[in-house]
Image 1 (tube, rainbow, N blue to C red):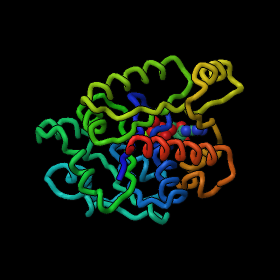
Image 2: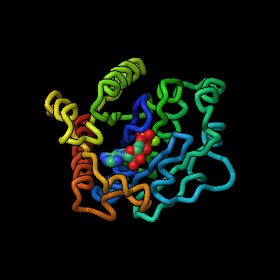
Image 3: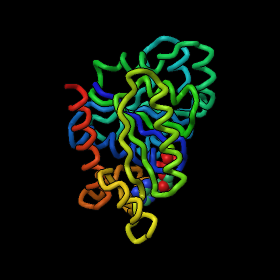
Image 4: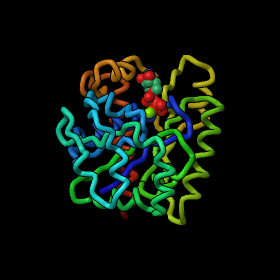
Length: 245
Ligand SMILES: Nc1ncnc2c1ncn2[C@@H]1O[C@H](COP(=O)(O)OP(=O)(O)O)[C@@H](O)[C@H]1O
Ligand SMILES: [Mg+2]
């Protein structure tokens, strides 16, 4: 089992879009048993996948006691892809972690899912607190979507610090240019400055995910957006394989 966090200190950079599409690639292209674990109280992943929220706010109960999250896991309409949805009850998850006083709670819970899943993808909230610290401890790889702008460069530096601070053996970080539009000067410059970073283009098909409640690969498999996520997923699998050796 390998766990992948999609993380940034900034909101609106494409984290949820990445998490849903990459989890779908894991489940569909790689045929891995995949869990998409939404840690953002906004529950964007559930919304994107069209999984109806339950009335009861129960997401926090996963962390409240030492128990397996399996009761809250939901199936999606896609084979091999399950979802652990978020809701408002985890808005104060950082304080909850503080109260429990266990620095590896998320890592332990993740470990407990090892027999049921091959890949776990975390959709993270844009925070720098105990939640992000625990995510770093629970992840084998951290994906950071970066729309080309000086502000996201700064956000990226903050992520690097956060990951390095999480422990001696911190996970590798993979920055990805997000919402890249090569018609724009700043975007071209960002691409030229980071020629080896993977790219997800600005694409209306990707935007449509939130309207159709499906990953782009499911409804427009040949679109540049779907291809970009498939390529990114291949790069992630390669990185994970290198790490294991
Ligand atoms: N590559 C893309 N092309 C076009 N729109 C995108 C792309 N990536 C994300 N978006 C849109 O940008 C907005 C923010 O994306 P989201 O994934 O919710 O970001 P975050 O989770 O970081 O807040 C959404 O409306 C989403 O549809
Ligand atoms: Mg989000």
